[in-house]
Image 1 (cartoon, rainbow, N blue to C red):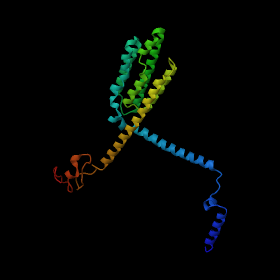
Image 2 (cartoon, rainbow, N blue to C red; image 1 turned 135 degrees about the horizontal axis):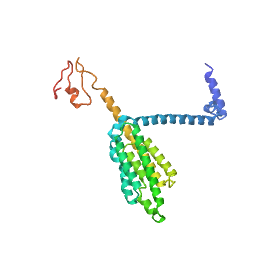
Image 3 (cartoon, helix red, strand yellow; image 1 turned 90 degrees about the vertical axis):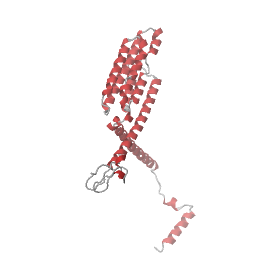
Length: 282
């Protein structure tokens, strides 16, 4: 131990003669720098994926909660008004087309979607049924209008096509968004309508309509996520608040009052022996 300081001093003098610092001498040569960087990147990616999966599970949990479906914030009580609305607007637009098949389709779809408002609002299966109804209607309407256009002459084909309701897909997606249909169903609806556009006449996608649909879908996801978080946090705070209240009885000298009721505050309830004072006395 007594030889420690002189040895350290001599080592420092030797390093100084070579122009080196103790940190540079003690640093080991790392021949695996690229492997270390790749390992850190993989670890960060794994952490991000773990956080994303937990966030995705929470999103699915709060957006499919029956309490959220039954709340007024979900807007699912507007099904009877908003769901048939695209069909009725398409009916008014198709009255001048002179095609009875399209008009009958509009009326039938409007009645079906009006009746579908009677489905249970606290179940995701109802959303899937409504999404299937809308996708079938939009695809069939597009096919019938295209078939009617092919029967017209080239001179009147453009005029007849303009008289049809060409934006039914965007309007149906917007109506389902306003009525609180789940975004998973909205995504399936958009995929089904896009596939039908490619398989059925005219066999192409409308870029403008697709861009508008994607915009509505993104807005629907953001709105659903924000509202579901607010409802979930509110319900959690209310349940925690209730847990502090009415669990004890009035007998045996236990204090009893409900925190959610302003009339049963501590200034209005009795302490000891179950006595209760009139309102206004402490």
